[in-house]
Length: 383
Image 1 (tube, rainbow, N blue to C red):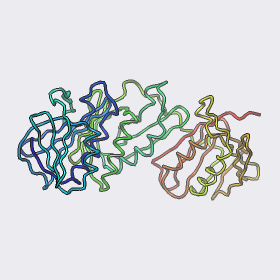
Image 2: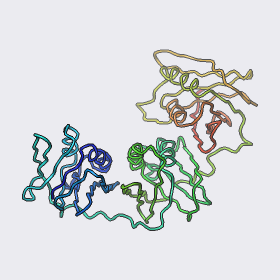
Image 3: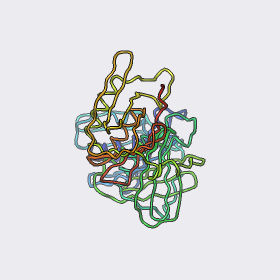
Image 4: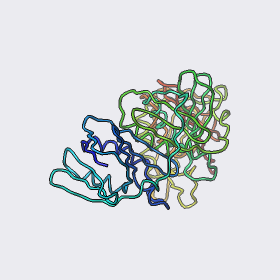
């Protein structure tokens, strides 16, 4: 194996491949990056228990002198390439025992692993793809994945549910105390329902950040995994096995709504951030639902008050909404953390919050975009 390539080109590809590397593996070879050099192309592969990534490296700077393959220690290899300041780097094997890295006056040797010990990655067959825009998928992941559970009491809540039906793709994420629901218009495709691990989607989102242009993605489905193809990247992840909870009745019906308040999003975020400083953080009992609790009150005069208190003090603020439609006074307690995370992903400058009463879930949505709903379950206030 012997090839030369531009350092910046290789580093860009390695940054993508790194998302498939495990931090630690019982199989040492899996902590490595497989390099496969053919007569005309360079392939990089990394895999962990959830994700496998393969990249085809194509660039005019790539000059192949000799084909071959090897496995290099992943983190060490990436750190070395980052540390180099040379424009061109040459790589070649020494008796299939070491990889020589040469650039200008620099020479480094790193130990390699046997590529025959690297498991054969069974990528999904590239047939009958479901197509979606890169930016649309990236945005949809951002708007939902944060609402997934972070414990495995119900393993299905550790992922985002994708459901396609009648040219509508719906993404749903929940931890039982909040729910994020995103709907996208898509091209005609057979109905399907899958649940993708949140950790895999986090890594996919990070990779997609490198692609600002609105490029098309192809998604290939199999029984227990999916493969996402874009440019020269193959990103494959396992799926969660089981039935995602039925959330069809979680969103309150419009006829049940008693109060609708419209806020300037930035002003509400600022106020909630401030009032949460004095909220009673319920860390000891690990009650995620009441983490950073605050109380919102709407009185008979339609005045909106936000308050919190802990052993160090108390605070309250009178909020000035853009508009309010209230039929009954309301007092409701909820997690400021959940509210702030929902506000962060809602697009536009104005948001609406619809309440039923102080004991039932409430809904947040953007005034300018109705494709995303954020639903939060309140906690029972003590008298």
